[in-house]
Picture (cartoon, rainbow, N blue to C red):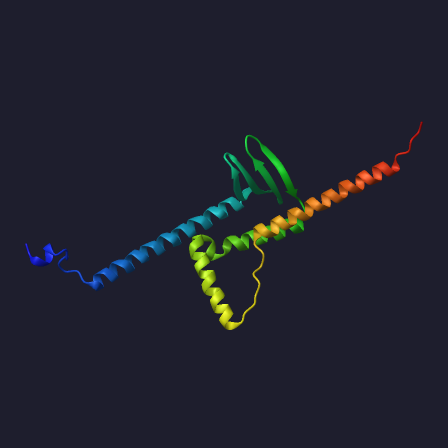
Length: 177
């Protein structure tokens, strides 16, 4: 056996070979990401032809979750556990269109497929660049923030209507004894 082989070196390899291997590996990973995005867009298009579409969900415990679905131009917030409970229904066409547009914009963003740590790193780099250039643009609120805000508004309106109904109901009653 040669001394190079016994020293742990593989005959015929160099730094250029290692660099070429890393570049090919990066190309393969890039192709996998492109294929996964393509498949995701095709599946999203398939669901758009359906009348029921899931907009997202959040686990709130073991076997319990909060789901947001669109059905026939309306958005429903459902509590899912041992049974399914309707928590909120958004039927205002303008509000539904606005929320769906924000949802589509959030999903169309290329950073949605990036891992969280990579997004944070990119935000730090952008923050450093914007501090240097003096940009003070505020980001638009996300779909979740907008939905939460709208749900809170609807809940407050419902409470006001209930209060007005109680007030008018007690004011109209007369004691007829």
